[in-house]
Structure formats: structure tokens, C-alpha cells
Amino acid sequence: MKKPDLFLENGVIVTENSKFFGGVVVSNGVIERITSSGETVEAREIIDLGGKYLLPGLVDGHVHFHDPGRDYWEGYRTGTMAAAAGGVTTVVEMPLNGIPPTIDREKLAVKREIARINSVVDYAHWGGMVTDNLEHLPAMAEEGVVGYKAFTGGVGTPEFTAINDHVLFNGLRLSKELGNVVDIHAENESITSTLKAQLKTAGRKDRQAWYDAHPIESELEPVERAIFFAKATGGNLHLAHTSIPDGVRAVARAKSEGVNVTIETCPHYLVLDLDDFLRIGPEAKCVPPIRFREEVERMWQCIFEGLVDTIASDHSPCTNEEKDQGMDNIWQAWGGITGIQTMLPAILTEGVHKRGLPITTVARLMASTPARIFGLYPKKGSLQAGADADFVVVDLDREWTFPVDQILSKNKHSLYVGFKFKGAIECTMVRGKTVSQGGRICVAPGYGQLQVRGYRYRPILPTHP
Image 1 (tube, helix red, strand yellow):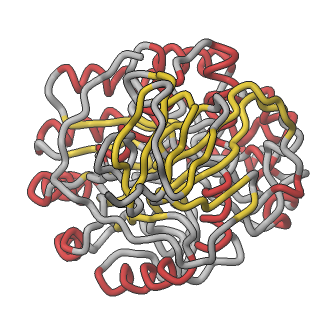
Image 2: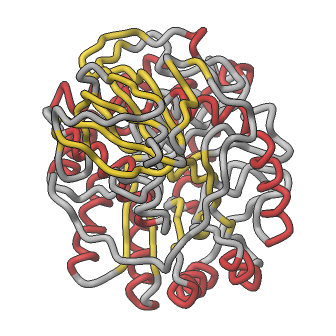
Image 3: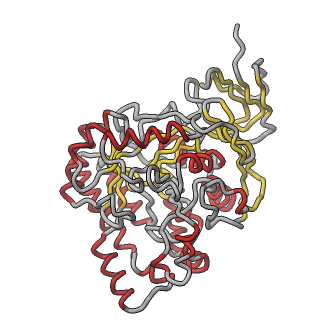
């Protein structure tokens, strides 16, 4: 009988539903079986986890690598290296910041060739939904995109245009027909652009001005509008980077009425508050903005109630100069967070250790549920026989400080530099092969493989921790 390729023994195995002491047997890059405590397996390679925690590899449903055309911000090579060091084994990359953006079959093919050559972890893609490309959505669905990203306002680059209600309505209708999902950046452009103009006219360029230009209402209104259209069309809706608990609860109400809608938040909306933004400055500038501490704690309450579906990084880097130029004028800084490498330690620190969040909930929010939403489960995001052997090994109790020289993104800056974490990533494996060990990349660019939506969208119901 042929020996398995790999046996990971003596670890705390973490799934979305349970944790237990045991091991994992791997053959041909796939999980052969999960073992119980004390069981021995003869394998060609045996790794003793020494009591460390083994989670399913993270599925980050919201990353920006800016290829092609803007890889000076971040490209697939450095972006997926940072992902690997952060325990992310599958990235779902956004269509908007490349030149050209990914809004049809041909442009998707260009991006995929770049990813094929450069990625060190597995990858999937969003297609773009813009002002005038509804006719291209079916072709991108045929190519296996997980869904379509669209902006109701606040687009960061001129090449990717915001949609109106007609496109939103018909895009959601198409999502039902095609069996995928529309992901909305929810922002009321009329409110935010008017407030920005008024604040600039008044001579405001302080950090508080950025927050004042993006009130809670400017995020909540398009969330509720998108839910209305999803209900009317029977379409499938996903809401990106939510910063407000009122938006989460609006989604919960819609789910109870049978609307197909899911909602994502990000670590920076759970770790930082407005006072932190005022102190840190441009490095913490993002859209939506970081909110008051009361809103942050209410977001955590939503997570403990099982109302948030996914946590994603919204990794959207820029050059150091594009952050630094906002030090004295917040309007001048790029609005995006460098965060894929630190998102798991941030959630372990703030959630598991500080608030008692079950680590099984971390596996659900950051691996299993995103894989389900994007049609990748159980191949991705799960620890079960037949799934890809994608793992992240965590020393749950190790305390450490994130230094600038450990940043693997192209531009060496992050709001988390100097941040004290509890919970460190020891090793990341993709399809049974170590891609990162102690932050060191162990595979050549091009190891990552394309992942496509494997089945039609299925509704996601609230799940309590």
C-alpha cells in the first residue's frame, strides 16, 4: 500500500464547527483523512505540530493587486507573497485598479496570464460591472469569475466607472440567471462628493475632515437600496467592507425575508477607531472610514450574534509617497489599507484573545463561508477528506510586534507596523506544499493555480458562533 505524502500530527485541528487534538493525512495535494488524537500514520513526510493550531487556509474574498498597469502599487508576485505569509491560501482579486480593468472576457484573460506566472498561492477573480458592460457579464461567468464587483459611488480610479440604479437592477437580475453574485461598494456619491466640496471650500484638510465627508448615512442608504433591488429581482448580493452595524442588521432583516444577501467586514473596522485614525493619519485612510469606538464594539456584537458572513482584508496598497503626501492634507493620500499579511493576527488578537471569540468562528468567517459564497467550497476553505490540503499553522499564544522589514508587499508601509499581536503564523501550506515558513516564501512564483466558481450561488443563512 502506497504511503501518504504527508502527515501533520499532534495539532489542534480547527474547523468551522469544532476543534480537537489530532492530525491530517495528505496525498497528492488533497486531504486524505483527519485523524484523532494519538493515531499514528506512516507517511513519506511527518511534521509534528507540537500542539499548534491548524486551521483551513484562509480565503480572502477582497484583494487588490493592481495588475496589469499599476503593479507599482502591488502586483501578483508581491501581493501573493504577503498573502502566503498571512495564512491566505486563496485570494479572490478585484477587477478595478488595473489598466485596463477586468470588465470583459479578453481583459480577464490578460489578468489571468499575469497571475499564472506570478502567484504563489491559489487565486480566483471578480469580474467588473460598470456603466456599460452588462452584455459582457455572461461571458465572464463562462470563464468562472466568482461574481461582479460594482461601485454605487466612490470609485478610486477613472477607468472603472460607478453604476446607476438601472445597471444595479439588471446586474442583480443577471446574477440570478447566471448563478453568481454582485458585490457592491456601498457609497452615496451625491452625499460624499457634496460634503467633500463643502469641507474643501471651508479650508478643511485635517484628518477629521475625511471622516466628516463620509457619514454613516452615506453608507447605509446604498446598502438598503441594494437590498431593495436584490429582493425585487431575486438576485444575489454581497456587500463589501461594511463598517456600520446598522448595515449588518439591515442584511440580517433581509435574510429573514428570504433575500439572497451576504455581508463582509474587514479587520481595520474591528481593530481601530476614529481616534486611532486621527493619530495614525494617512496610513489608516480608507473608504468607508474607520468609525467611532461605539460603532466598532457594535460591529463585534454583530459578529458574536452570527450576523457577519465574512472578514476580508480589502488589501489595497499604494506607494509610500502616495500615503506620505496626505500627512498635512488628508485629501491627498490614497485611501486603502495594506492588510493581507496581518489580517489573521489582527483578528486573533482583537477577537480570540481580547473578546473570547471562538477560533472556530474565525475559520468560518475567514475560510469556510467565503469559499461557499464564491463557489469554491469544499475544495477550498474546509478541513475534510477530498478538500485541497490548504492549511495555516498558528502559534495561538505567541506575542510579537510587526516590524517594517517583514512586510512582503511591494511598498513597505502598513498601519500595523509596531502593532503588538498575540497569535503568530508559523506555516502556510497550499495543496500540501509549504508556501511560507516563518514569513519566508518557500515556492517559486507561478505555484498558485486558478480557481473558478464550481457551482451556482447558494443562500448563506446567519450562523451563530
